[in-house]
Image 1 (cartoon, rainbow, N blue to C red):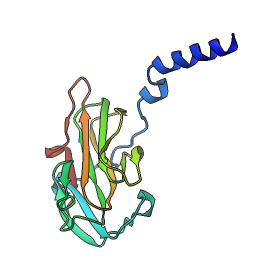
Image 2: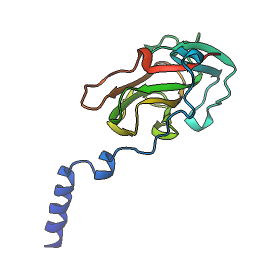
Image 3: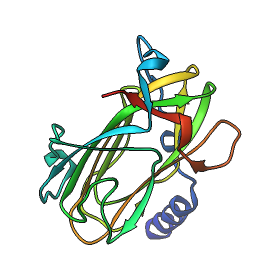
Image 4: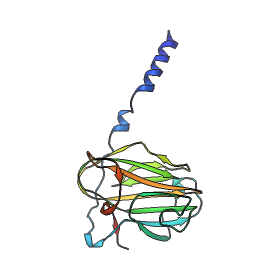
Length: 191
């Protein structure tokens, strides 16, 4: 009897949808305060590089010494080529930062695909982390509640150890379809 009940419970758990916590939007994002003046902004996200082999995002050196060309989009799937805008294909650590522009308040759904480790923060909140060495791996959909339109600080820590590299961040605006993040949605302070 007990064994039969246990099997039924296990079977029921296998068909239960994602827990409510997995579907609950991340809240509490803080916009840029004060928002930077338009004449102080440049297109894309700033990136600083540090070189060296690491195995976990916690080992990444955020004080990268090499300033790279800005990232005008967040769809990078280089295979065995150079990582992002760096001049290297292996052992690249990237500290990416700037602002993301939300056109409207509401729930945006993000997805992050990475190879290797990544941490995404928006408005002071950690949105996603997949911090070890791995092949291309797509996050589940991540709902994020944006309280008001405007610019929000964005920070991405990313590293590629060896062989192939991927860093892709997608979003679906409220009521919209999943798209690449690019254009005037990504800006940084002029350097």
